[in-house]
View: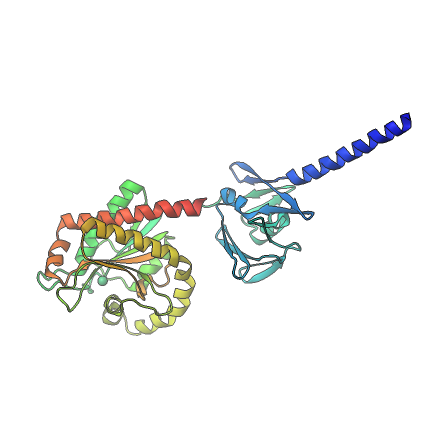
Length: 379
Ligand SMILES: [Zn+2]
């Protein structure tokens, strides 16, 4: 009797131990320490005997972004500026065109995208070793970047030997008006949003279209806003238009496109046109594609505010193949702030009060965009 009682107790103890082991298996979080910063614990859970982590749980720690492409079972993870692509239900992923095997599959478990804990513990440290290192059971990682909009490049169109469009009545050059509006906008963005604002030109000088985008890329700008005034042979044409880049030649407006691109033929060095065309496919497909949704959102927000702020004719948000927007590694738009070829609009465009109003309207658009974009990128 006593012996079987003891046997029973020992069995219960063994069972308890087993349960504890299981429980600890379920609760064994991965500890992540940010260099010079806070520690986090990343929850894990065991599914089919394999330790998994939820990709969404990485976002608050790493400021990473997860996207799912259910049509072809791809899962994207953007982390430290790198892009991991998992093929759901397989153990494979790619980074920078190289394939790797995690031995266990990435899964969609009850609507949660999950990867094996092994990916975090081992693969991450191997693939991005300059940012992530493993020490024992925890990871030591670099502080994630602040992905908010901090730097904006304003691009007053034309300048120097290139006057842009010239008003028919008062002979106002586009280059002067757009510089004045850009200067006002710069002050608003600096004072009210605390942004770092750089201008492709601060004065009346010639800068090629390619240099403008390069300047924005080199300064790691988060946004690129090019400011122009429109012109038409039709003197009654009027109003506001905002553009972002058309990819694969679906232009909404060949006329405005030609107007803003012809600086290449008129004022840039011989052979420049061929260079821009050769670069077109490579650059536009690689750089702006990724930002088209955001460029479209930025264009819409700026445009809505310009129309509401001025009550001028609304010519809509359009896509066109502007050389100056190609190759920009950030959301990029081009604003046409009125027709300098229209007598009434030319008079307004040189009026500082109107210039201030249009600058304020563009400012409001950028501000709203920043609010949405920062929330998306930082959560
Ligand atoms: Zn222009």
